[in-house]
Length: 259
Image (tube, rainbow, N blue to C red; front, side, top):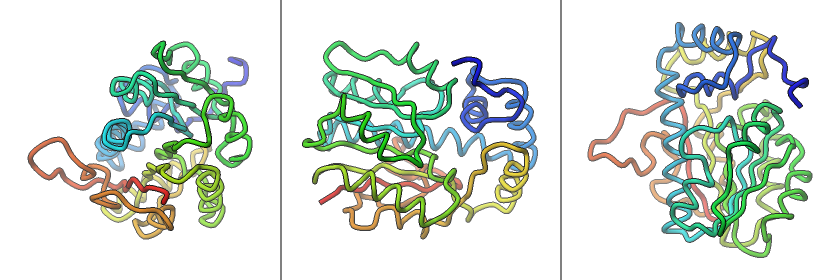
């Protein structure tokens, strides 16, 4: 598997890992990450806010919503508080399937993401553009007759065509039973011209492009779902843990329930 890891071009999962303070990245990723930050220094704050959104949503889903099954697509490199760790702290019997198509991500996941004995974790080598393959593989671990939380954190921006992205999410949601949830967040383009410029230069670097969407475009992923309060907001403002309302960042997300 290691032979298939391309270290000649930057990779979004490894750049993200660098912004989050991780060590699972290469020089090409660190250079690209620093070039991005020179144009838009707020990206590191946005990355941390996105990760915190994942932490809070998974904890809410496992806690208040009572979900015990999770399908996390676009896993990214393991860091502190991964999906199964958050869920299994609340409910050790939680079952989690991770899906990603990056060989470095999968190598680290299989080595580091070990389940609590009461629950289960599995790892699917598949691209989000092939939702059928993900669902088929996930069925070995998850019971599709019981509610599942689908987590899409920062991944749909890699599907540039809006209608294709919507169709992928709809395909995944159609396979889930009533009472399931979608937790989705993605990069937006409303708060900073520097952010837009940085993404444009990133997309010209040879890395897999990432398309920012407006909050209105992101909201379409939740069509037909019951949004959980506070609805679609900047990720920093989805049920923040502090007393003060945090500053908005260029990333929007929500949690929606399938009726």
